[in-house]
Image 1 (tube, rainbow, N blue to C red):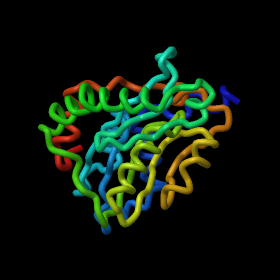
Image 2: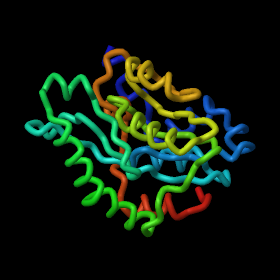
Image 3: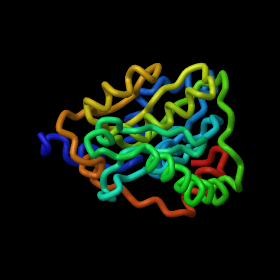
Image 4: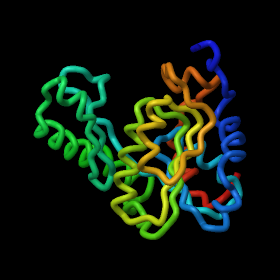
Length: 221
């Protein structure tokens, strides 16, 4: 099963080209959908999906909160608007205190997220998307936590509709996200998902200059 999907996509450009075939691009243009990336790789992918369209492109910053004794186990996530999504199952099974999560959320927000907002948006807060149509984008989704945090944050702002575009994701993550999004545009949902990098031949690290370019350019590709 792993071999079947290994390197199924060449790179983000390949993923963007294929996603443009499943996203209703004419509606995206006509209805002025706001495109919002939920990761650095997602931002490059979103930039390539948009191409020369005038749709606005933004990045919703969020940070993972890890288990106290395991810095590889994400138990919660906080967004730049201080919305928190908690993996209740993990928190309960590890007996983690909610005070720890809220404390870590405040620290991550103050120490990391706010610095990103100043660095990449010159301190500008995330634009209001009340009554707007939003398309959340990522290159892949292992647990769905980034999307869930973005969904909670966006839905609290009163959008008209929220869609998701993602190249690859686990089947159970697709099931998790579906009730919260108006539709999900994806290329592959995989039962035995390993990690996103496995499904791309090449997944370049995004340099800071590129992030600033993507967020600064109106439409230039």
